[in-house]
Image (spheres, rainbow, N blue to C red):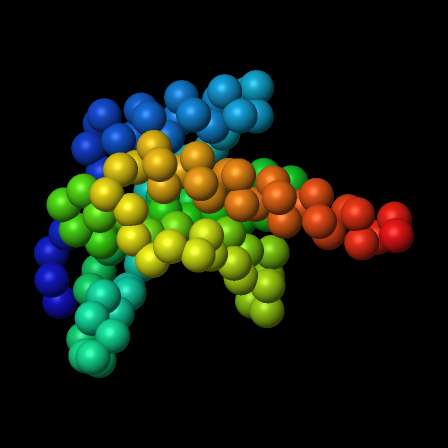
Length: 116
């Protein structure tokens, strides 16, 4: 397996500050590892440092897939997983704000369907 550096203190601070601004409260951001297939033409898995948090009934992950490379998604359960439409980001703030925006749009759409 390839070795990818953990999130830097600066990257962690960007995530914590952005989530605090978004939710008006500190979020419990947990560090974990995920096994991801980074090369679609290979079966080799890479151990990727991962940030995980929950808000309401939604779960979020940002995985570090290389130096200044990030992947993200949100999910509600095994059968409800969503990405942002972009496979990789080179800036963690862009990755995080896009993730939060796409999830908020998803929630809005879901709530409108319930009302309509």
